[in-house]
Image 1 (cartoon, rainbow, N blue to C red):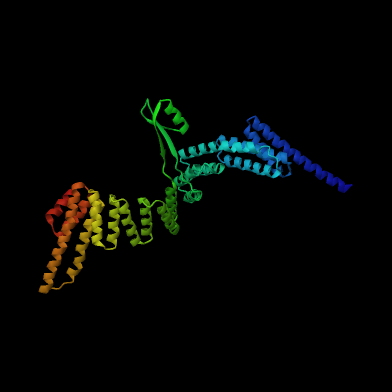
Image 2 (cartoon, rainbow, N blue to C red):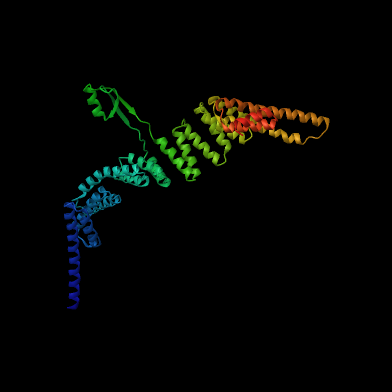
Length: 421
């Protein structure tokens, strides 16, 4: 009798737990239908520990009500509720697939589809409030709800970049690359006859408005593909994260897709410069000038690297081209002048090593004359530069120093006065 009594007690206890679980789930359902979301959540919290012992019907209702409850919480501003709602709906769909009784799955899928718009709106709000990291997570969640809406993944990556969360941005950009995201689209426009302004609309609406004679000049414009941008961003992020080998591979891939993108060439060149590959840097910079021959900055940078490698004549050619393209390019003018000053300074050591013999004195005078000519060449470049930038302190200061080294007191004092010294 004792054994039977114990078995009976256990069975009764199990029945009470099942009954309690059913009551809590029904209470949650009732509260939610009455729009009492807090009460529904409280009832669900009480039901959750008892869920394992519930029957299939109760479990399905629990997942469905929980999905609906957290969907409402999300709409009221509780951001983390979006994920909890989606998880519950997905648990429901998986459970009903397993049991073969699909009572709520269709409604759950419809609810998730409708929720996508709410999530995107919440992400827009986050981004407007500069909460970029949270916005990125929501956009990624929206993308995972509807894989066909790949633009959400693209905006999630951009939002992660704005948040300076480069690891997250890299994950999203690589995913975009893996799904072969293009991002181009066709935009339909027509000119409003009454205002004379072009307006964008969908194709059907545009065609109807043109037929109505209220609009004219219909056009279809295809926006550029975003593939090159994505691969470029991957390379930039790898560089920023210090993953230089991966960055170089990404640049090579990006340039294969878009060989005439001068920014890609420059970014790869700068990475080679950072890695100490100065010959490769110079090669890529020269390539960039063939793509963008009117860009003075390209020639300036070629001048800098040649100057570092002591290729003085090549540096002068590059600086001169930069100044030709931009007559007010102060840094190019200063550096071009410096090439002559440095060459002149290089003669001083040879001058100091000479003795007092007649031949040495003659050689000294020859070297001094050459040095002074180089200094005057450097000074003339800066005098010409002052015509474009008469008050530039850098130009005035360097010019004063050259005249000081030449012993040209008159010009030295003139420059001191211009500098307010």
